[in-house]
Amino acid sequence: DGPPDMNLVVRAARNAEEALKLDPRHQEGRLQLAIALSLKGRDLPLMEAWRAGHGQRARMLARSVLADDPKNYYAHGLLAVWHVEVRRRGGPAGAAMMGASLEEGRRHYREAAQLAPDDVGVHWSFARALVALDS
Image 1 (cartoon, rainbow, N blue to C red):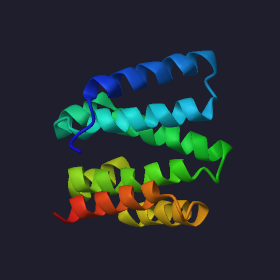
Image 2 (cartoon, helix red, strand yellow):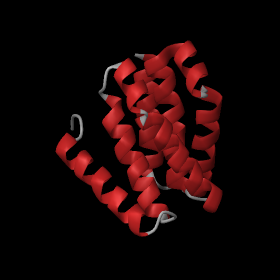
Image 3 (tube, helix red, strand yellow):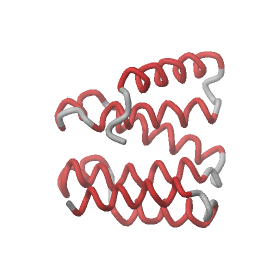
Image 4 (tube, rainbow, N blue to C red):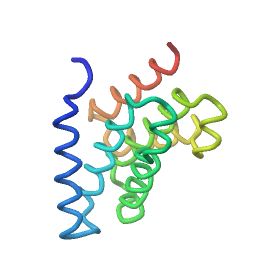
């Protein structure tokens, strides 16, 4: 319930960064860092989030995971939510600036749902992002 504990998110990001120093291609490390960065940027004011670059880096990390493993449903799920969240926070102009689109979000969701149809997190996360977009 409620927002994630930011101390835990900061620690997760730091741990993922340390893991990536040992092995920059480690898929789980890249994915966990992308998740932590997304969470860090979620509550920042819009311009501060843009300047911090967390969203851009999170997308790049998730894309790099998919380049190595196109069937990584968690990376698809993350990108599905990323596109919707960028559209929600930045509106049409912000989404255009960031290269986000609802159609691309839906495409990633469909891929994640096809790869992991029984994973509740995939469906819940995307539904939550859509509800927030509509509110």
